Image (tube, rainbow, N blue to C red):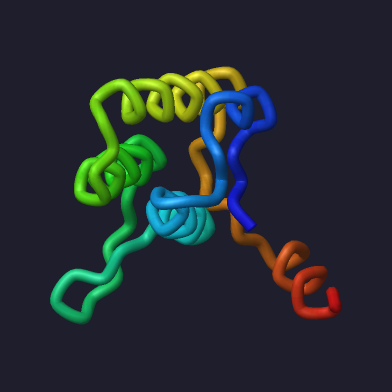
Length: 99
């Protein structure tokens, strides 16, 4: 399940041809880490979001679609002041018991 802010769901579908980009972005938000040459590297939330835009471009999104997604993502990031990874001990515990 992707974590697209509700306000953006009117413009951006969490399903379809860009779903892979959204899922990759959600995973990056979980850990804010990428692996480079076998070594984990911490990235910022801003870098994480920019990788979403690159993925959308690679998947064939138009500039208008990327702009709409970027607007929604950046508005959410700025309003919510999210800058930490979304993974936590409590979250992992809840997810591991969820069926």
